[in-house]
Image (cartoon, rainbow, N blue to C red; front, side):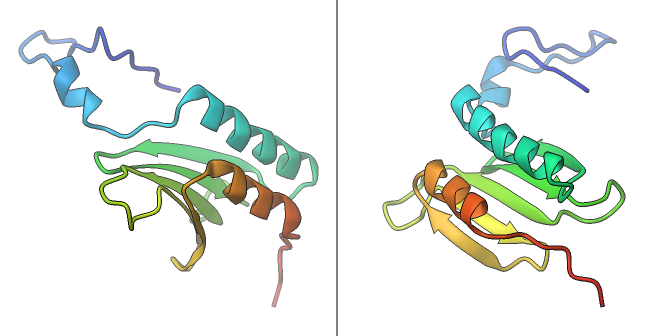
Length: 124
């Protein structure tokens, strides 16, 4: 696990430093959002439906990915976009195929959708 603090990011060779202004341009989940996402993740872990997760912080979005198995592609993703315009919604729930399942400006509605839907692993 790698933890970076915005106020003290430096390279080990001291030849180049990353300024806090460069890192602030990334999108992050705040503590409340992570608590909500990790609570549903913990519930799905206890049910045996999920096994792993990943968090990516990009310039225009932050992505929380749910995995059924460690070495697979993400089963579901919650994407938090920077709010650029009124028409663009902030949160997206995306399937492994890349289709958008749910969009909302509130994370609670995405979490509620995950709670109410019965996620099942289908084997062919």
